[in-house]
Length: 122
Length: 107
Image (cartoon, rainbow over all chains, first blue to last red):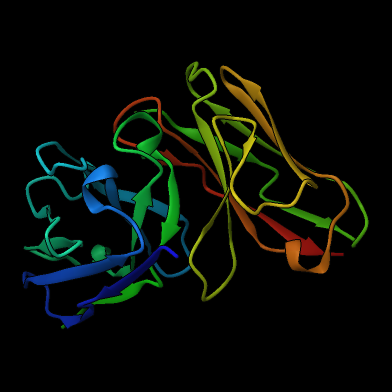
C-alpha cells in the first residue's frame, strides 16, 4: 500500500526558513516523479514544485522560484522542500503528492500525504 | 501559463441527481487534464486523468469527457459522500495549474 507522510511544518517568522519532508513507502521511489502542492486558508489548490524520479529535473511555480528548493533521497524514499525567505502568502497546508509515472502522466497526482501546515507570521 | 476556469463556482443539487461540472482552458491541452475531489481536512483524491480515465478505485458514477479547451466531469447519481469541492488540473505545460474549484453542495 502506498503511503506518504508529510512533516516539518510549523510557525515561522517572515524571512525565515523551513524544511518539509515527505516519507514514502509501498512504491519504488526512483520510478515516479514527486510534487508539492499547497492550499492557503480558504483558497484553492496551487502546484508548487515537481522533481523527476531520478532527481535531475526540477520545476517550480513562479511564486516560489528562487526561494524554494525541491530535492529527494531515493535511498530513503524521502522528498524534501527547503523553503527560504518565507512570506505571509506562503502560509498554507503543504501536501506532497506522488506522480503517476516518472514522466508524462507523472504530472498527475495519484497519492497524497496528509498535509503539513506552514504558518508565516510575526 | 495555462489558466483553467471552472463553472459554476457552486452547484446545489440533491442526492440522486446528476451533476455536470465544467473546466475551460485558455488554450488547447489535448486530453491532458485531471479531476480531483477535495473534502475539508482531507487530502485531495484523484478521480479522472487524461480527460476520461477513471483512477483506481473510483466508482463508475464518475466520468470525464471533453478535449482541447473544454472538459466536463459528470457524476451520474449523487451519493451523500460526493458533496465536496472539485478541481481540474492540466499537465500540458509548466507550470502545472489547477482551476479555482467548483463547490458541490447539498440542496
